[in-house]
Image (cartoon, rainbow, N blue to C red):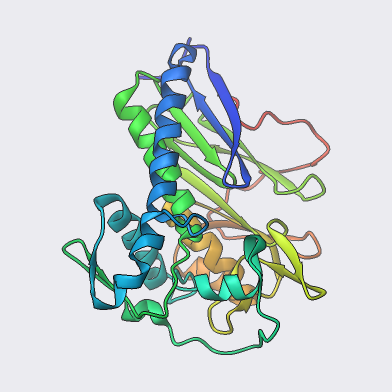
Length: 313
């Protein structure tokens, strides 16, 4: 089955301090698809938000040291985060919530005594078995590196299963997931973070995902020092901004996001690491120069001044 002859439609809105977009190949299914998207986002937010005191993740924090039962959804979200930590050798670490608070992320008060300190790889001391989470009492989880990507995957899969959309693409910030048939020629995506950045036009085949991690967004000043939200777990401080952005294509958005976030953290070592893992990636350094792995499609770079429809089937 293909989407040929169908009229696509897109809904755009803001969520989690970023922009969201939902495209379905069959325009008549857009309203139903958006309803499912909103429901998934609300469920994920209720399960693991670090910024609301009534989230499940916040409510269980006081009991996690002795082991606490978690809902199936939170278990999936935590599992995805811990798998990403293992996959990247700890470069993507879900146990840095306290460090982000100390750095003043998202309006937290911050700690004036923040200094460079090594971490103890607390994620290795977290267990999740038969729906029971056990973690050191001092750990505060931040699932931001994987939860948004997980939500994108879940929204796309849910719409494909529950709605006759004939193909769906969902974008939550830099995390893009697809499900169902792709338009003829694939889903057309413009890879570009800020307007001044070099751009690339690529096509996603059915079921593929793409994620972009950026050091240019979610920035703030703390006591006159500029911070960004991607931390290097070795020091508990923002990763050196070797790369403006790292973009990865993979079979799921969670997987793409794990590699793209880790690439930011690994800095100058990222290209060789990604190549050794067989990952399709595109990196833009702080001078605007583009580095790709051998599997990134050649000829995708384009003049950023050109107008490109980001979600055009």
